[in-house]
Length: 462
Image (cartoon, rainbow, N blue to C red; front, side):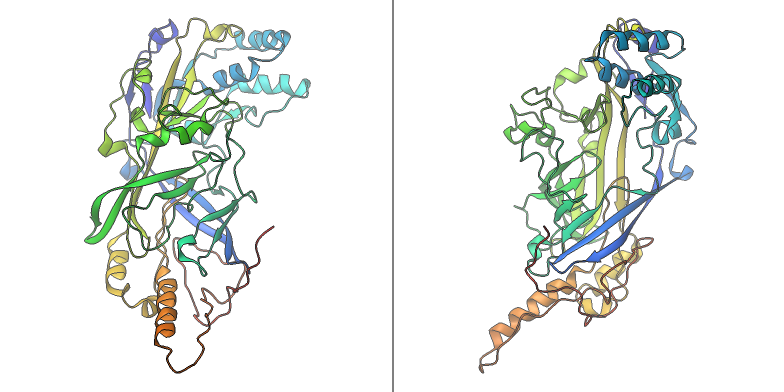
């Protein structure tokens, strides 16, 4: 969490100065459920994320408080800036009657999961009378409100039974083949997996991609160096600065300029369209790799590539992620709105609120299982477990080796067929039923290699 240590100075038009407080840790459980294997070599599923506060891994309880920007106030300002003057005046009168300020003191728990805001409550009453609606104007605000013990949408991904290079690549999200948030087709593409696993046979020249619903876009990673996790050789991939660069530096990011052709300096992603009007901007922690422009608007940030760069350690043969760190930061644009007197004199700034350090690594049990049985996958199939982690999409270990073995076995049969016999492509079987499977507490069982689950049909979703 970022604590604003000079609130009175900020309210008088000064530059915000922040101090990082933390970590405050929530242990996350990811549960895939409603798993349905389709006849067109895809699998449909949801993944529920549940968070429980972990005091032992935190510097204090999550009722600790800190001073931050009032996101509800600036959200209302953003929503009203193009509305009729009478509506602006009415809302300002309501604001004047409250103790609401541009900066507020709030607990860690409340900023995550929600707190009642008197100003939002009054604005909601005004909106209701005028038959206006906004999903964010409910009277309660929290950055992750409604996201505990819930899923992040309906995924449809390729199983890879016909092409391992497509294994778990996302084909649809919420029944849509692409996003609609951004201004170009390229920016709206669903690229890569959900981040839980990647196609096998990973090479150093591959661009590894995953779709992250927390930042409303697909992310690309590049190889950085050879690494190892608990003695297992891996390839380390990282999210480079260019992923958050504007179009002048990375033309592929032109579609992330919102409104279209309106690019802010590199380093921040304008997510206000996805945040129902909240002036929310996503960046790497401590503005890592961002334009110096932002460091001139706020004090107290200290970017460190080792601490703040997202990374994945991938096992080259299987594509299994053995260790990962998903890292991103939430920022609110603070500025003066002439029609809201409580914002008078405020200096433009992109104020950091919090940054997420979603980390996980396989434990000794999974490590030993991986080392001992990866060379004999069929013997391990009934004991091989998913290793998952949460705060958005997570990682898991799954028995890709079944598919790899299947492909290799088919190849050997074809090359050894010298007596005129015909070798037909077999069907790789993942489970004994097709619908309703649930992965709980990071564990799954793959019961029967002979069960006819995945069809070789070429049928595609409509």
